[in-house]
Length: 459
Ligand SMILES: Cc1ncc(COP(=O)(O)O)c(C=O)c1O
Figure 1 (cartoon, rainbow, N blue to C red):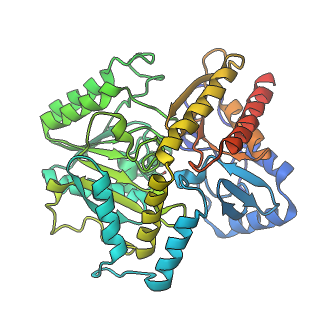
Figure 2 (cartoon, helix red, strand yellow; figure 1 turned 135 degrees about the vertical axis):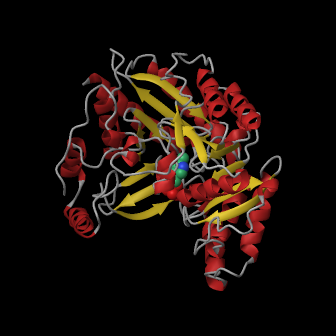
C-alpha cells in the first residue's frame, strides 16, 4: 500500500479531500491497524496488488460480504449503517421489489442489444416523462452519470450550435474527461492535461462560504456573475449546475434558480441541472429542482435510479430538444438495459408506493433536530444544512478554520462503531441515509454520530 499522508491543517482543502475522504491518510492506516482482521487484510492486499491505485478509492478501507436494507457487512462480520452508499441506496439494499424485478428481467430478457427496444425501457421512459414537469419529456439512458452528463453536453451543442458552457467551481459532474472539464474540483483537473475548450467556470452559490460575502443571506451576486458571463460571451450553449451540491450540501436560496433561468432565457443558453446523487427522492421531491420554481431544459439522473443494483442514468430533455436525430448522443452498449430499466421501474414504485419522498423530509428533520441540540454545546459543529434526507454537518475550529482532522476523526470513530458516511470538501460530514430507515435505526445512527462528535471535540 502507498505511504500515508496527513491532511493539511487550515488553508485550502487538499485537492484529494474535496470529493470524499482520502484513502492514504495516517488516520486511515491507524483505523485499519486497529479494526481490520487477518482475512480482510489478505483481501485488501490482493486488491491493492491487482487494481491500479487511484485517488480516493484504491487501496480500499475494508472488504464487504453483504449489503441488506440499511446495512453493509464486512468480512470481519462488522455491520455498518450506511449513510454513504455512493447515493445509490434511497430504497435500501436488496429491496424486495427491486430484487424481484431484476430477477424477472434476468430470467426473460437479460440484455437488449442496440437496434432493439424492450418494454422495460419504454415503460421507464414513459414514466420518467410523466413525472418530470413542463415539457421535460424526451429521455436517453446511459450506464453511468458521467456518460449521461456527456450526452447533455452533446445535445446542448447540437441544439444551440454553440459549444461553450458555464459551470461552477467545486462542482462534480463525473470522472470522465468531458465531465471533469465542466466539473470544478482540482482533484480531477490538476495535471489532467488539456480539458474541453470553452468550459468556463464561475463561483458557485455557496451560502456559507460565499465568495461575495453574503454570509448566508444571499445577495445573489453569484447569479449576477452568471448573467455577466452569458451577456459578455453571447454564445454559451449551456449553464450546468448541481441543483444542490452534494459533497457539502450547498442549498441555494429560492431566487437563485429563478435568476439563472431568466439569464439563460435572455441569452439563449440551456439550463442543465445535474441531479445524479440528489434526485429521485433524496431531497424530498422526485426532482430537487421542484423545491425551486423553475423547470430546466435538461435534467440528469443516475445513481439511485438503478435501485442500488444496476448502473443506470438518464437524461431527460425538453421535447423541443429532440432535434439531433443524426447525432450519436450516447450510443452506449447498455443503453436500453432491460435489467437496469426493470430495477429503475421498481425503484420508482418503491419511492411512490412506500411514501419515501415524504419520509425523506421526516428523516432530515429528525437528524437536524438532534444535531441542532448537540450544536448548542459542541461548538465544533458550526452548521447543519439539510434538504430532504441529505444533510451536511460542517465542522469548524474556534478560529473559523475548517476542522479537517476532526472531521476525519469523527468519520473513523463512527466507522469503528458501525456508521458509515463520507466527508465532503474536507470538513463536512455528508449524511445520506437510505429512505427506508426506521426511526429506531435512525436514532441508533445518530447516537453513534453524537458520541463521536462529543469524543472528538473533547480531545
Ligand atoms: C453530481 C454528480 N454528477 C455526476 C456524477 C457521476 O456519476 P457516475 O459516477 O455514475 O458517472 C456524480 C457521481 O458521484 C455526481 O455526484
